[in-house]
Image 1: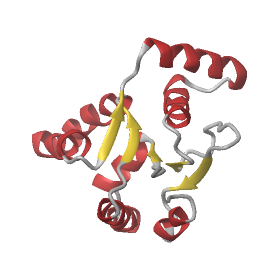
Image 2 (image 1 turned 45 degrees about the vertical axis):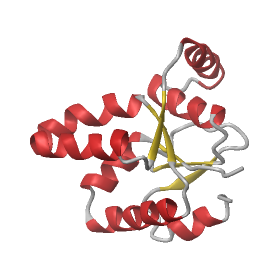
Image 3 (image 1 turned 90 degrees about the vertical axis):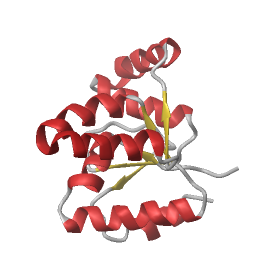
Length: 149
C-alpha cells in the first residue's frame, strides 16, 4: 500500500503564491510525488479556503490555476466533508479544543491513513501517529521519503 502525505490549505498557497524559498521545494516535491505515482491528500475544505482569496489576489487566472491543480491535475485527492467526518471532527474538537478547519484537516488525514501532514501551523494539535512536517523546510522531499513507501 502506498502511503500519501496530507497538505493543509496553506501549503497549497505557499506552493502557488509563496516566495521562491517556499514554493520551489514544494514544486520539486510535487514533481517527485507525481513521478512516483503518489497523490497528495487534502480535504475539500481546501477549495473554500483558497479559491476566494486567490481570486481577490490574482484574479480569474490564479483562481483557475488552483482549480487546475486541486481538481483537474490528478495530483491531489480531495476528500469530502461528510456527516460521518463531522461527527469525528466534533469528537476531536471536544478532546483537543482544535478549531474547526484544523480539526477537519487532521481528522481527514487520519481517516485517509496519511502518516504525515505538511503545515507551518505549529498550533495545530495532532494525535499520536500523525507527524507534522513543516512545509518551509528546504529538505522537505528528503524528510518525506522516510515516511512514504
